[in-house]
Image (cartoon, rainbow, N blue to C red; front, side, top):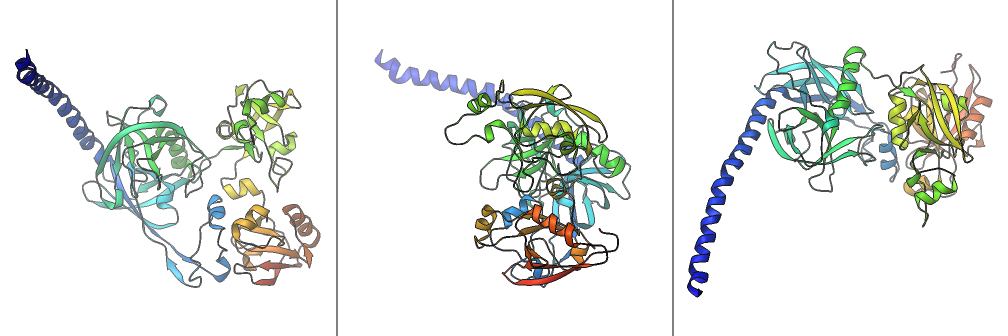
Length: 493
């Protein structure tokens, strides 16, 4: 018996392992052949996209104080070079990926790959290069469409899947040109669905990402994420630069909604409500309070809905003259339903409203003072710009935000400093002509202190008469404070 244990049993185990290995090998080879087939099937539809960027003028007024970088990134405002503000610096050539959408030569890629492009070149898998032009872009989803100026007749069009049917755990294959290495393929799994509220270097109004552990690197942007049948499930868009094996792709069903609109009209038209500071119930609790306890205190039956929290600039919870403001929606309301459909949270409200065409009437169910109320309103058109949507209409060509204690601390500014931060300046506007720039701080109008956005609006209304000039006190980046005259046109802009 001892001899059996010492000699025969190990021999039997070795034989069983060998038999098992022989049985597994064909399965592995079949899987390997599947990945090879997918690469051969999809690569002809994947392209390399290179865009040459315009030079960008960087003036002294464009310098920004340390600490404002993240704040400005949130609003999608490009940062100049603070070390050498006067130079004309060529922006680097952007390189990314894309996939062929139709036989007419339309190609889908990320907006951040071709944004600001002076010229675009597309290289197919066969090495041939073609000039392309921008058809349209949607910065809110980071989806763009370009078109080959002279498309060949044998374009290979990608097959699209239904991203609503994706399941966590299934295989995922990423294709593209990471670091310019064209035709690259990596595989992994779908590791999560519906990712949103991600802190990305680009401002996206809509986030509903597919998360994958298939390797995605710089240059993969715009390339396809496909299933084991070679059908595109999503478009590779972002990575977590700190984490490992965390890549994110836009669901292909979102591309299916956006791309045809871009091809037809060059833009995407969406409905707009105009509420400010909407949050999920779970996101407004503090201390030891739970979402359920807060919902109970509000008299809500559950924790669903979009809570209207407002902001320092819009304490009433709605942008002036917006559909929400006209309908009487205000801070502390909870939006529970849109046209009878339950609103899960803040992002769900944005998604539902955005899918309704401007000019359409909608019925909202609002929870106010522990009771349900209904509001009928007509949606406006979403401005298509995060700054316009958040900060409303420009005055003399600029949009501003109150210099809050949080922003002062982040920017390293004096606690005593009062004013408004210029967030956006429209080209060829009175503010633009007066050399007021994003990042400037307006502290006075006609020698009277400006303490808030409301104060700014009030003083503009008082002093900005057609054909006159208004004197501002503007603190430039670096701390220099200057008087600036802004000429008001005969017809105010």
